[in-house]
Image 1: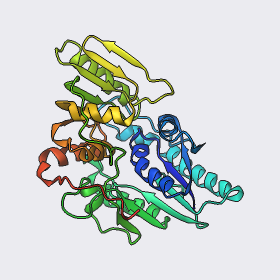
Image 2: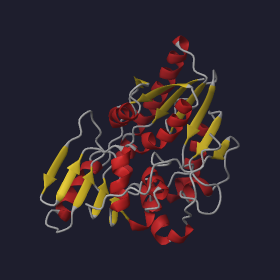
Image 3: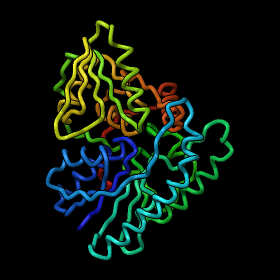
Image 4: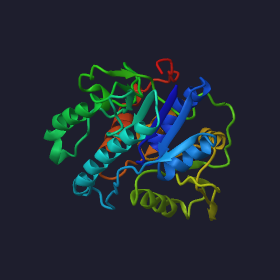
Amino acid sequence: MKVLICPLNWGLGHATRCIPIIRKYVHDGHQVTLVADGYPSQLLQYEFPTLKILSLPSYPIRYSAKNSQVMALLRQLPQLVISVFKEHKWLSNLLKTETFDLVISDNRFGLWTRKTECIYITHQLMIKMPCQLKMLEPIAWWLHRQIINKYTHCWIPDYEHNGNLSGDLAHKYRLPTNASFIGPQSRFENHNLDNMDKRFEIVAIISGIEPQRTLFQDQLVKRFENSMQKVLLICGTPSENQEIKKINNITRVSHLPDKEFIKYLLGAEKIIARSGYSTIMDLHALNCLTKAEFIPTPGQTEQEYLYKYHFVNKTNIMNTDIDCRNI
């Protein structure tokens, strides 16, 4: 088959959780083309140097530097709607000149078509709203469902029953008829978990939308610059050349290959990260959730919910194997 795989550029998480799916289609002999922009494009180019990558700008979302994202996101809502229509038109134009048997969109709302089979990947079927807008959650869920219904299938990267990682986000409401659970998806699955490096006591994974990504990085530098502990900051800014900087006891790297990334996570006494869903899936795959300190992006309701869900209900988390059988 010819397969088009398109992760959203909203941090690196949507791209990283597509990596095991891309690997499977490539392994099975299918012709895979990727669609990405920004850091996700650079990450996927690093992971899959032989694959063709098309450029398609993601939604022009920028977070507020404050502790609430409500007004910032509302102001950008018209741009978001326009971007969805643009990417839908982009796909329609692409299919006039090139044929694909399957289109896979990770949380990009507009990449559906009636001309071929389309799959939408999301763990967030319901949208968590801030407290002052809680009454709008059923409406947001209904609107998202209308988008999901445009696609042939909806894949949910989580367990279906007990031990699920997403809580209310995928399990509170009745599923759309085209939805199915495919198990958590992590780029770290099927790697050697016996090889660990203990040179860093603390490993921090920095990710997210600007300016919050940079603010998080600066906060961690300030927190540990006078510490005696050895700290590794993985900045989530992949590029052709790995950038390494040292500040006293802190080593800061722009990105790491998976094998190095894994051995430092396994060897760390503590892992600090945003409570993004892809990070949770990665740490779950490594059995490292119990040593994680999650710091949600301020005002990012999904991360705030997942932080509470995993810290208050850690006993709900099952260490079972990643399931790719339904892919």
